[in-house]
Length: 80
Image 1: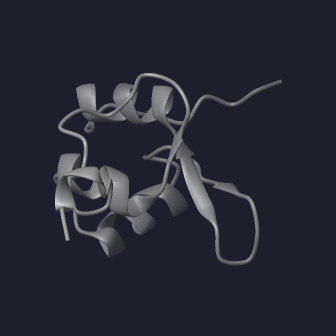
Image 2 (image 1 turned 180 degrees about the vertical axis):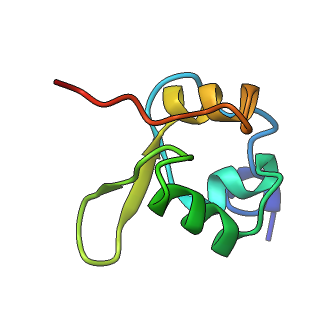
């Protein structure tokens, strides 16, 4: 089987600027493990996920780019 056409076998080398990404797509770019990232999300120090269903959660790519640019000073923007 040729793995070059399977997007899971060959993840993107960059994170798209727009759209949504699941944890497995952002893990190669994250300096944190999944549990630490979850803790940061819960504390409001990482992008908040969008829950599509009970088992499908994704993160907005624009917020992920903001977070990865400066993870120490990132804060979730409160929409009023």
